[in-house]
Length: 268
Image (cartoon, rainbow, N blue to C red; front, side):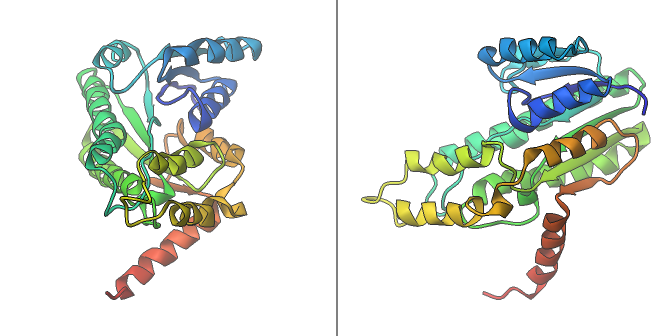
């Protein structure tokens, strides 16, 4: 595989950090964008200890316009748009300002960043690629996660439209749709509602909400080894060919296909 110059957002932890290190180990030139300054030095030190002088670490908060403008000066072949966050809880009770915040981070900011890199590719008359980290939740809606997965549903639609619109410019678009891997991301998201859920005010009780989350995250299928997903990412992201949508692991892909077929038979 030809070596690529790749920018990864959300590389301060989890899949982003793992993919940054994995891609650098494969010989690609990687810029790891991390959200906050305290994440910069630890990842730089980790890269140094691994002898990865092709792994550059920069602060890149995708909600910070100055960070974004600086990022646009970097020469990259691929934007791996991985940054995101999750708000969970009952859709009929979650404060709408939290919904707006989740869409800002997971939809509007990634779209704005992608638009600007796409324009850069087109103006430079070169091919390029944008890969979005979506989710298994981009293709179905489990109880308790409706708001978070609605942002991923939106991202799926945006990516599909971009994929078609940009063919004439030779700019490729893909999504990566992880299952429930144990990176701490899902666990943090499941804690978020307990900032505002109040048994004295809300119809949904805290104990019931916790049980809903435990029904997924407390099972082996909800605590998968993230290395499997990272291993897939470092092959998918730099590739010039492949599927538009990439669900890992296979049993989740099969479950999603079955779920979508059964959706046609749903009744109220």
